[in-house]
Amino acid sequence: MLCRISVGHYSNPDCEAARMTRIHGVEYVAARCCGATFSLPRYSSINFSAREYWTDGWREESLYPNDEGLRRCDCGNYLLIDDLVRIVENSGTAAQPSVVPDNELMACLSSGVSETVEVAARLTLWRFLNHPYRERYRQHRFDEDALRQKESKRVTATPQKWHLGKWLHKTSEGDRPEGAVRTIPVFDCSEAQRSNMRRLCELLEQNSSLLDAGRALLLAELHREQGNFEQTLTLLDAPSYRNDEHSILIKTLAKMQVDAPVRFLSRS
Ligand SMILES: [Zn+2]
Image 1 (cartoon, rainbow, N blue to C red):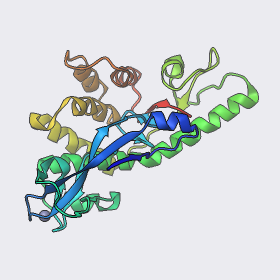
Image 2 (image 1 turned 30 degrees about the vertical axis):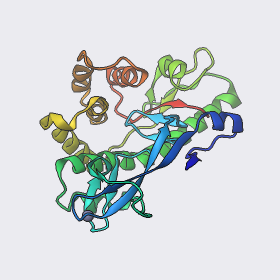
Image 3 (image 1 turned 90 degrees about the vertical axis):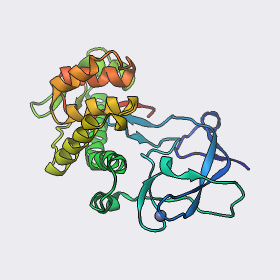
Image 4 (image 1 turned 180 degrees about the vertical axis):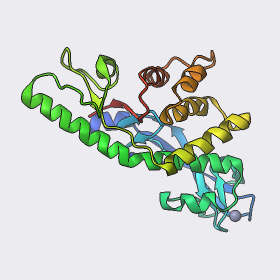
């Protein structure tokens, strides 16, 4: 079976066809907890394009599943897709394991899950709790761009808004008129967000098996969003870090002492 899925919304059909993530059949897996069987899509090609990329790892309108692989088994246990055991094919019509909805994350965390599952749940919760800020950010960017178009003159940052300078507008969000600057709203971090980020840092720093290359960068970002800019910069000075756009942006924002999640690429 060959089918195409497109999670994103793109107005150009030719562009969309070129950007497909393709699924070729399924594989059958079983949960270790109770033996329940599930099917998982088998990807023949994966496209990581999205409409927006954010420094906390969120991808808006992603062409590829945008989660940490956290699932709920039929028996009620929380597990990760990576922990499912592959079984022989042609095992019937097993459904995919249930995605854990955002409003169930706290119940998941209080159910005594392993540290591996806890990290996946807390990374999901981190991005979920950042979503309201993303909305304010988009609206602010939209309003500021509209104002710029209307007045065609430089926008001055207020004391309540960070001045991100030319760097962001030139490298992150498209062309801007010479001399233009961008501002972003203040990131008012709640105690729920802070305690979740603190616990994530604790887990990732105390158990190196939980820390792959992608999560190592997220650890630097977690420190930045808590205002621990020196720790972010120290982490990003390690030779193991790639010098890609994501890493460079987090480092630049830490140097500017900006603690907000930032959208760093947008096709709109
Ligand atoms: Zn189970």
